[in-house]
Length: 304
Image 1 (cartoon, rainbow, N blue to C red):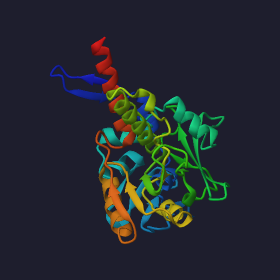
Image 2 (image 1 turned 180 degrees about the horizontal axis):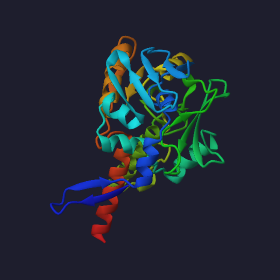
Image 3 (image 1 turned 90 degrees about the vertical axis):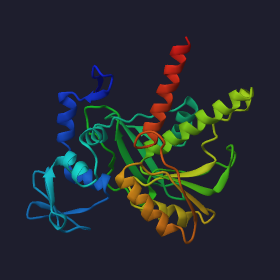
């Protein structure tokens, strides 16, 4: 992906031939299972939705038709544009894995030492989830190489109710086991944590007390990734930890994320204190992190 500018100064994006081909090659069955949480069964060579039996995917695993909604198309780009309301650029960006985690050394150490993330032989980042007894029950692959698959994929046998989760750490700064942050994806969960680190570091420096900075400031509160917009994982974590009284929904700032947030707020407001935290820049928290870091680097270069 290359950022360009017209003579007027307005920016636009150019995708390489390889990026567009990779986005167009997306396997629709795998994509919808990970992106929407749908399940499929094979019938006469076709793939038929279990939750939505009018949704059918051609044996080529590419062409799809959702008869009850009179929607049809070829590939995941069409799905994101026609069903989820993305524009073309957003759809391609979503599929080619344009996001990146900008984690501090302390954050990388925290997640790696607790066996929350692995790098497998295919160079995929594997985000792991455990039950309350410490047994691994879930693994989600996030491709780190631009020219492989371009969306999260649950490893076969994973139990989605135990998706990527970081419980509040008792010795961490601001420890509060009664609060739970909820995200769509692990990368957003970690990006939000990195933003908390940057914010605290800035606040400490502003008052001349940099030595008071705590790199574990993001670990004091429970965090869970839904691996989509389904609340299966949320229900499980609330069941496992009755101390949680407040839920902060930090889902994506797109049509799908906003609709899911509205529904979740309605479903959980009777028994919990619920709040919403919307990414201020871009579609999700990783977009916001990249914007903040890029802006900071530009200011630094200008000052130099």
